[in-house]
Length: 489
Image (cartoon, rainbow, N blue to C red; front, top):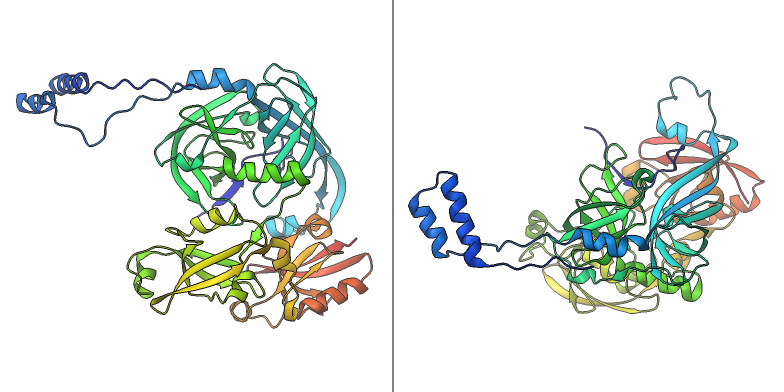
């Protein structure tokens, strides 16, 4: 079975790192007459035709499709193309033949040259004075951003800020009296509703694709802050950052990711709800940065088997599979195996509901949790912390942030150590700077520094502080181990 990947829908070109609703005038009598005629044409019996003509109501009334033409004509001018440029380091070549086809080793090849990188994406104007929303991954690690309007005018854009956690970025161009989109309420969206995307797939500007909402509040690996809107709208490289419209022409999401085995659209795409994006935008415009709350739990869906095991009346809630040491949840007394049923009095039906509720909270907010434990309900109170504070918390030596290396780490849990047959190591929680440039990823386990075993957060900090400009980290990722050279700042 081929491995499947969640792939950001932006591919840098040349690098592969690159309103108005349609009227619904439904006349039951005419519809049943049409069905009777259709039945007769298909060979239906007189009885069947009589039943249809008599007005036996169908299970679901037919609904006219939205006026996509009107939506594109009215709001297409507010959709922009985004071109980026920058530089990237190529990986070393001439690897041994036995390693040449291993993507893990290719990823960690030593850099040997800077090469120009160009990328494409989409965005949309939310204020007439030049404020634009797009994806963070569209403008990540680039030197220059150019915005192209539908009338072919081009502007150099300033990145006011971006947030990797939600994949939202805010740009500004020096222009006035620009066309803008209207913003909707994702909370009113339902599975089966019509939706429309406009963007620049593969550089084809002002391209429109349509479909329906196929799921809501979808939680994806590595994206715990976003309750994604899942659709079957065709989204391809270059669509990233473009708007997702509802059937009345309101923007209810930002197209962000696809689920793909090939890198192209295969029937499932994901959009960031616009209310989440606006929450991020407001913080960036006001302060230039974004602060996320962290509860500090990993949760999974409760199926029927798990509900039976925990003696729940029905599959519901968010099952806690792990609790971060020193986190808000740990201090509140949350334990692995708890099922979170309510967050501040709001019921949690699916596990994806929890990050959706957290996305609108702030660090320092109180969170009243109702959990199911041992066959009964228990009320717990937590104080949400900032995301970095959880990872960097050093209460009783539970975690630390490594400035020179550019990683935030935590100790291995006993379960992780047993599963990996490890005697030491620390888990990478966040990456930036030197570590990110070297190819280290979230979830990697740092086993040693320059051949000396790492058995605690404090030891890693000490070794990095004493190291020179270059260190060799022994990394375990899945079943693979490899030394990674890192030039530290």
